[in-house]
Length: 406
Image (cartoon, rainbow, N blue to C red; front, side, top):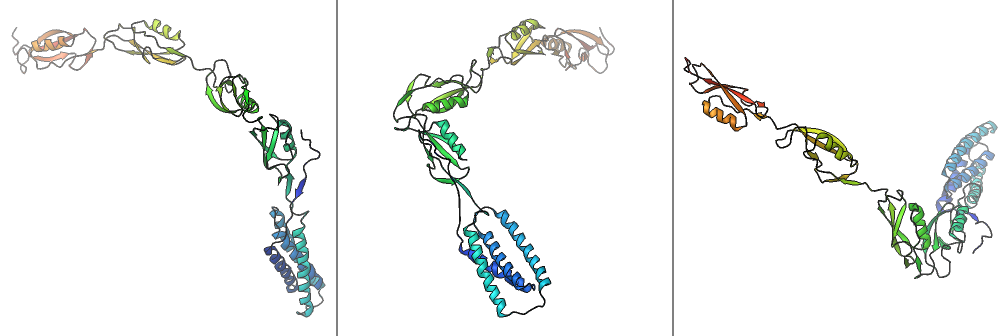
């Protein structure tokens, strides 16, 4: 097992000035000095402002991620230039024109400011550092120990597996990036765990009852890969392993892929709807409720089923439904009503035949009528088109002429 002699070293990245950085440093230096002269500052003020301009220019162009600090530095530069302008106005006894000494100050401040700015860009220890970490060596460590070492180093670890002739099963073989590589603090590193020698065989462990994640971890540590499928189980809680395919105890090649079955909980129980046609309402309801079904009632007319008895169910008899489903039982309200035929204007014989044809009885009543010929139907009661109960009677109003002749 590899021992960690010391914690991984953290490094600071440094940079060298680029061409654009050098140019901006020179421009900032010259600009600072010219501003000082234009606003009437003294020669010392010109020197200080020029140096500040070069230093801030280097700070702004330095590589790194601390741009917020650079923005603050620009604000400080503006404030300092304003301060030196006011100080120069107070200290200057008289305004002087450009003389060789002025040009000398410009050159001097540019040179001094550029030198200081370059130093800031090259050695930025306190202003802009990027933290990095060296990936620790974990080869030979157990999985848990290797993960702990990487976590202590400030790294995020993702697990992988691979066969190894030299590293025992369950121990770390390598990392990617490899040990000793320098990466950003918090970077993600892949940790590879040995599954043992390639081509070896193993006996599948029993994961029944383990949670999904636990079962997959057990199989992975044993040296096999897994694909997840689901199935109903009356004995295993949902989201827990029911079995593997091949089953536990089977010898398989190391690295083989097996199927891990995860429970979805008990399967819904099903029942077959019985035929309750012809049973009384109470008997039909009881037969369905005893099977764990919910019952709702409805009525419908029936020529063949006695009033008050069940005519059918919805879903129909012998249909298979889940236990607890709702079934509607239809109860007969007796035969459907019959429609009175339209017989006005017919001869009395034809009218009688029409009434009898629909299953109704009739009676005749003769009345005097000057408009309707003797023997024709003037009206009916009920009127034609109305519905009455089966076996009902229709009264036919028949003309006997005018005057009525018996």
